[in-house]
Image (cartoon, rainbow over all chains, first blue to last red):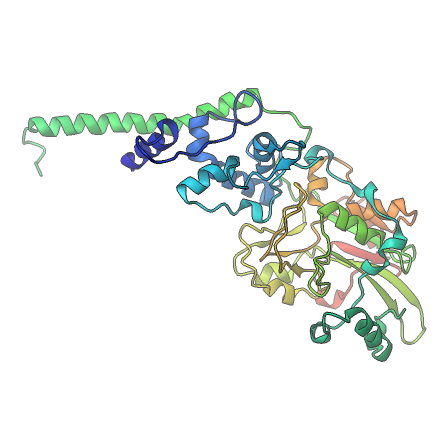
Length: 175
Length: 258
């Protein structure tokens, strides 16, 4: 274990001697991270796992180790000031993870670029489009088995035909 | 191996000293996170967000007045989708549905009514019962959620839910909102806008805000544990009904005039 830790610190801090190319890690925002850099290098995954359980299960959100804040500080921007995903090649997360061959699962679900809004001003309920443009999204009830048998290409017309012919449980709106 | 009476050799003494030093190192490393957390306390950002854990002091729910809900209006659905970054994948038979608008007709009287149907946030939730990993869970404040970190996508909960409230995500998603993580291979449903509930006092879910913006005000967010809240009063007066009350699930979402 000790040998592993020493060799790991060697990789990150001093680089391998010789021909191994070490990751180039883009610099984040501000002077320092939420904890010492060495500590974060070794323990960020444990902090994130701890924080995620606290947040999802117990609803504690005012903690410094949220993934949203990682992304906020460590995201890079291109020439047009558009944020680049932190899990893109050679970006903050991926540069190191590619080097140590550890796959990141975070960004399959989590946003990999900062949002315009964050938790402080969450809620964009005022941004709805007009009702007329969205009648298609007025989702209606169809028995699941029947739905699966519909062909993709003429889904809408088949749905309408189905509604007309099967007045199942009177749950269905025909239009 | 030596006994307690035998004198340790020189190499054994050296080994002991080494182990002692290692022990001290261990204590220091164990204390490091504690010291760090003390140091962090100073520059912790104050975001105004509640930092204490949720408790069973509240039980959040919705009171939906179906007499105010207009047939053909889907403001709540759009509000929900905008809030959580839900967009169509092009395969509308597998698209996520956190809220559905349903039109009902009574076969005897011909009476029409319209209502939004979403996760009913049951007190004894079937989705929680059947989940093999414990990913489908009920928070202390009554909000039923999916912990996507432990969801394996088996979809037992989708089958168990009598309200068809859950959706499985079949395709990769890349444009999530930062407050609403969603991803392929997991199940999801209405979270009662848990990020808003946690953010500040008196925050309404997006569907309720959208409904109010459309001047219907059919959806009212409230605390079932507060005897003075409108939802509690409506329940007490026998006006707020559960859908499928025969299942005795004690739902957090109640309907008036159904």
